[in-house]
Image 1 (cartoon, one colour):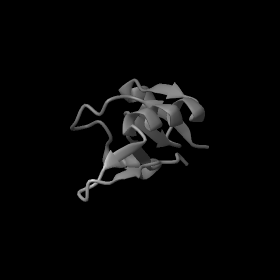
Image 2 (cartoon, helix red, strand yellow):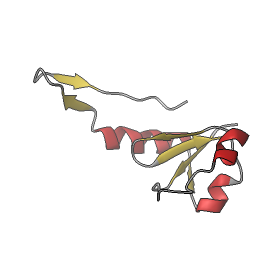
Image 3 (cartoon, rainbow, N blue to C red):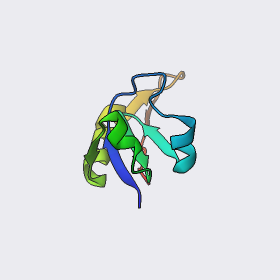
Amino acid sequence: MKKYYQIENYGHGFITHEENEQAHIAGYPGNIWVTENTTWPQRVGAIEKTKEEAQLIVDNAISSSYINPNNTVQVLQIILP
């Protein structure tokens, strides 16, 4: 079962190769991480979020839109798994 966490990536050693092989750890805007790995979040001190909380954080982080190189506004949306 996928769980949702928030923590800032602190760089080298944040996610080890072994941890990612055990269960893929995917990062999203707003420092949201999704994984089935149960030991990684404890090791790094990640804060568990509900899917709804995590989605709101991602939505706020991407600010719902951006201006592309053609100077037109496009809506950007990421739906968490």
